[in-house]
Length: 94
View 1 (cartoon, one colour):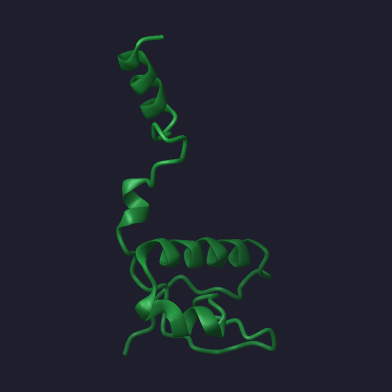
View 2 (cartoon, helix red, strand yellow; view 1 turned 45 degrees about the vertical axis):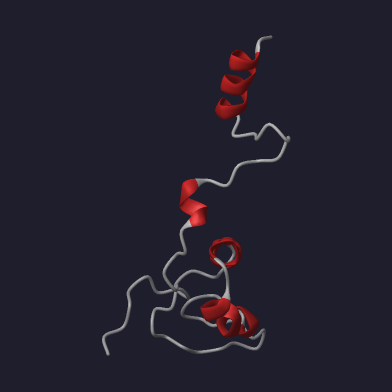
């Protein structure tokens, strides 16, 4: 396989020439806070509004874009197993 074909194959699989995965453009940009203004912490120290744990809430402002996306991945996993009606998608008015 020539270098051009090899490069094209790597781009299709999002693999760098060194063998690591490339960061998607979406994950390089810092996401907005998932806070919805419902700040109630349950017995497991998880906010019932945004589904972050207390340490994730505390780290959010200093976290890198990658760290914030990792936190949001955990949030999505928590929401997926949450009882119906616990999570509110609407931000509360100030």
